[in-house]
Picture 1 (cartoon, rainbow, N blue to C red):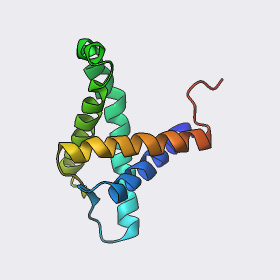
Picture 2: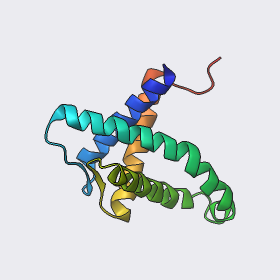
Picture 3: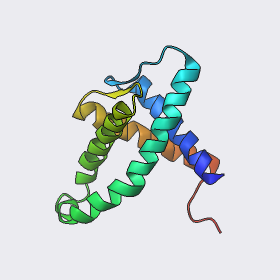
Picture 4: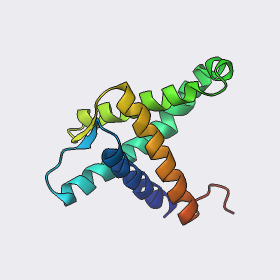
Length: 127
């Protein structure tokens, strides 16, 4: 149940990023198609954050320390671009146009997911 809620939260956060950030768009014509696309992209987003992000953090831990963690913003933007690329490879109509769209999109997704996770109490420290 927690996994389903997490995917839904990510889908809502991705939808918010399409409204807030120029350069991020879902080009489906109908709402059911948009929702389906966002759910699949949210699943891809979760997989990228679960598999790729820890590897990048481990490899780049020195840069994280040197930049006092600010390099994490660059990594998140690049991972957001990677999600857009994966979506394109799967034929989904989720588009991320460039680094800055990915940068701001990652920030919007983080803020919206943080607020929704707090509201839904989806903390990972549950017993």
